[in-house]
Image (tube, rainbow, N blue to C red; front, side, top):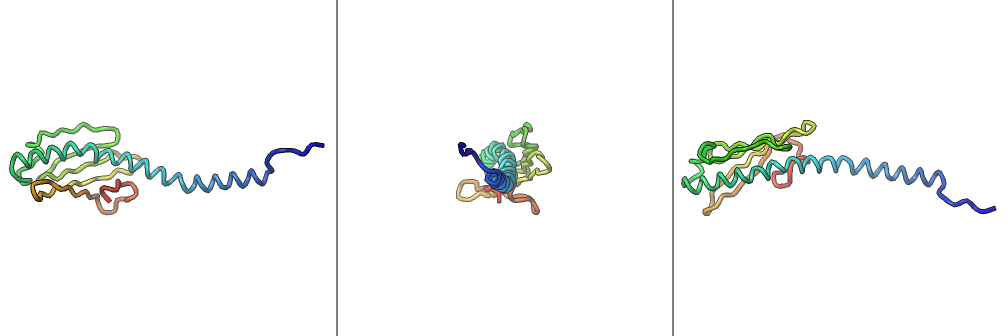
Amino acid sequence: MKPQKGFTLIELMIVIAILGILIAIALPGYLDYTTRTKNSECLNVAAAAKLAVAETAQDRGSLAAVTAANTGYSFIASSYCASVVIGANGVITAVSSPQNSNAVTFTLSPTASAGRLEWDCSVAAGTNLTLVPAECR
């Protein structure tokens, strides 16, 4: 008689259990990563608004003169970014499109210092920070 070759049932069950544990740990992290990546599109789209604010502030002499009307910026919604709005003093508000109720509102506030603009990114209180790109945490 030849000895049988292959895996025993217990060995296969151990491998399946290990895979199940790895998937249970990795899947939520991956889902947060994909949502964070989708939310970061709004920050990338808002780069054009940041440029419009910077040019207008340079042209008008200060951030106080920056309004939505005089920047000339217009926004077209994308799959993952619902709106980008320039407010008074060049403050930009970007809202990501809700994916499974995970919409994030980013506020980009400019500060003029030494002839350049520095941007501070913040999110609303209570926002799940695992869904927010590192730039705004």
